[in-house]
Each structure stands twice: as C-alpha cells, then as structure tokens.
Length: 483
Image (cartoon, rainbow, N blue to C red; front, side, top):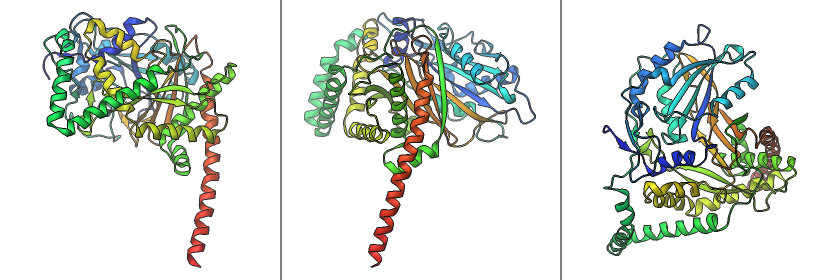
C-alpha cells in the first residue's frame, strides 16, 4: 500500500453525514464480553495494548489518519501515516460501577457510543472494561464507518481474536487489503467525463453484445430503484424525528437453532426470520405509542455485502442496500412472515441491489464540494425509516488471552432523523440483537426487544404446527406408496 490513499466517495459519505448533522455519530462497534482469564481476573491494560499493537501489523490503516478532518473542496481527504501514533491514545481502561450488571453495562456502552471519534487521530478506539458481574470483562470497540463496514469489521476481528484458547506464536495473516478509490486528475474532470464515459460505454456495447446486456441491466436496476424507493417515499413515523446527541441500548439474544428451525418449517432464510422478528418489535413500539402502523409497512434499509470471495478481509466499505418493506400492519405472526419472505424473494429476483450500487457509484462522480448533498439524500427519511443489519460472525467460540468470548453486543449507527436501528449478529450458535436508539426520541426502545422475543415464541409455535402437518403428510405419502 502506498504512503497515502484517497478516501473513497462511499467512505467519505459517512464523514459527510456527521458534518451535516451534529446528532449523527457514524461509528460502528461492539461490546465483546469474556469470561475471566483461565487463572482468574482480567488482563492488564499493558497486556491488552501490547496485544493489539503487535497485531495491528495486519491492519495498517489502523495506524493512519485523515489528511484533513473534513471533506469538501476539489479533492477527497487521504489516508496518511500517523507519525505520532500512540497505542495508549486508542486503548484505554474503564470500570463499571457496582454491581456491574446489565443495566450498568448498557448505560456505559450507550454513553461511550454517544461521543464522536477524534478525527485528528486514526478513527478507532478500544476500551478494556472491567467490573462486570461474575468477574467477566469486556473489550468495547468504536470504529468510524469510513474506515470499515460491518462485514469488514467482523473479518478484522479475526485478527484480534484467537480460535484456540492456547494459540501458538502469533503470525500475521495475509495483509488486509484496503478498498481504494479510483484515482483521477481531479473531481471536475471526472464529473465532466460522465457523458464521455457513457459514449464510450455505448460504443463498447455495440462492439460487445455482452456489455450491452450488462449496461441495460444496470440501467433497469437504477430505474427500478428510483421508482420504488425515490418516487414513492417511505411513510412518516414517530421514529423519524430529530435526534439528540445521546443514545440508549436495548438488547436480547436468540438461539440460532431456534431461528433455523423456524426457517426450515416455514421456508425462507435466517435473514427472513430476523426481519420478521424486527418487524414485530417495531409493530409493538408503534402500537404502544398509539400510532397506526403504516399499511404499506415501514421501509428498512438492509445493507448488503458486495465483496467478492477474493476481497475477504478488505477494509473500507463494500456494501450496497436493499430496501425492504416490513409489514408492521399485519396482525398475525404467520402473515408477517409470509409477507417478509415474499418481499425478500421479490427483491432477490429484482435488480434492486445492483441499482443501489449503481446509485452509489454515480453519486461518487460528484466532486467532493457537492458530494455532501448527495450523501445526505442517500440516507434521507424519504428513502427508509429504520436500518436493520444482520451480520454472520464466527460459528465457533473465539478467545482473547485464553478467555472465551461469551457475548457480543453489535452497534449500527443512526442516521439523522432515524431514532432506531437494529443490529443482529450471529456468533457461536447465538444471534445477538441490539436496538440502538436515541435517548430522547426512543425512551421506549425496550418495546422493540419485547416484540422480538414474543415473535420468536409465536413463530416457534407456528413452525411446530407446520412441521407436524408436514410430518403427517409425509407419513400418509409413505403409506400410499406402500399400498
């Protein structure tokens, strides 16, 4: 990697969203809760710093800072080496007040995540958090979204954690690749080159029919996205209001096998079940507020990973979005699930993900001085009501200093006027849900968790009945075949 690399337009988007609204905090993160060390107690701060400092060799961007704190002008900021990098400024220690239970943990994490990262330094922090009940301890992370997306952060986590409680000498893996912005002489020339590029693409399409089909598919995808999600605005709801600068958290965890048993009985995917659970949680919130759920549903922005297999362990943002209508107006769990599944099947058959990527790519053609307006439009309330992420994590237990990682609380940021976002992350047989909410606009965020838990039970019963019916039908079919 060269000494400096330009910020990509998509990465810059997350800086611009913060610049446009003081209440927006565009960092992601997680609370990683560990059992006590094998000999008891917690690791020392010095040990944690040395551990992370050594392994940052595989994460070179974590030692880089932005060349300037803001975007705009005619060039993007660049990632440049921080010659004054000090691991002590990024890895610190804190302790929960007694008794160190769930209430204290969530309050501490919400406050930690309510404050922005210092743009004069590399855009990440980790806190060794002590004082958790039962002798447990945690590593709490905060990383700016311009540095890495959710999937990329999970991959980076594999560098910092171990798959074995007694690992051998650590050797850095293949260095993490960094998504790079395309270089061009300047942004104005790039913008002016759009018609030329279009003409070149057309000429190429004439010579290469396959390119013509790809270009036509891309155009259809963009038109489909604009018609569905730009011209038909998302409904206004009580979760789409101005925010404060402070946050609150509500969490729950669900057995991954419980989710899989539902999808096996009812069809669909794990993601369908996750979206159905979130739908029920949002419905519960609206009803308790005395609000009529929008008949067409609440529109969720669901980030989609577009990394190729060869881009595993790549930093930077490689995502697009699907916009899914969550059927919060449906009264029955089975009806909600059918509608969610129908929505996702329709979206998979459509070009929406490609359209979203093309829209982001086109937005990247705007010069930095104009890009902020485009960035805000991509995260406006007319496009979506709530963000819902579902990230697959490690399927087996991970360790730090020999202590097993028992729990993960994931964080997805809140865009301006989006008072609630839901992150789901699967790890070691459990799906962890975190409702990230504005402290003032969503004091009732626990209702979303209550709805998720109740929906899991309800869908579980629907799945049991469906499985019993399927078993009876299979038995009858076998009897008929034996006659």
